[in-house]
Image (cartoon, rainbow, N blue to C red):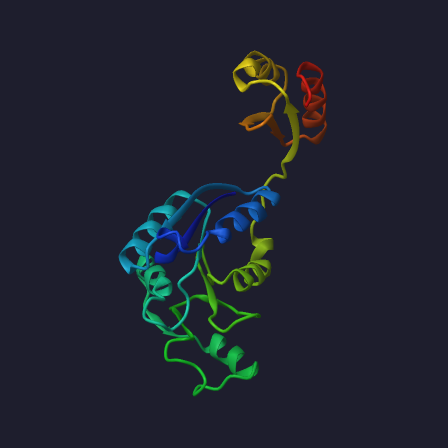
Length: 227
């Protein structure tokens, strides 16, 4: 399963808010064996949201959009997603009924709180107010991290793939000096290899067979100088 993550918010692009939602979602999806192939941040503009969502849903199995939900002037994500799929926004009976069951009345809710794209499945917000939605292969989640995490858990089982296994080997050598051994490693084992320099070099081995990854890590540890 291949997925794109779209985060929405002018504050993300201005650097006023750190994009922790994207990192958390990528980690959760990766743990489920799902390949995240795009992470994109777009401003609070309907046209930008619609264009990116429409492009990505044609390329990937699912698109997760987070941020910009609610009834305020800059909460435009639902409108953008509706535009991408050629739907109208309308008051969602299930979303409204859930909110009323959980202590809200129509008078409590700002106009548009329960408006979702026509035909969407509502995702209820256990820790906030604004509902999310699933429309075909597009999942729309809140931007507040606690709300996003709780809502994602309700649909996490819909994201599946081949589990991957990882091991890290730390080498106390310059990265350039390790190139021949990394090339040898790739020839010997059916794994992916990434190297990340710092005070030492962390070499990360990834594969779909746990035994192969463990064997490759053991071989590499014998070939490099440890810190």
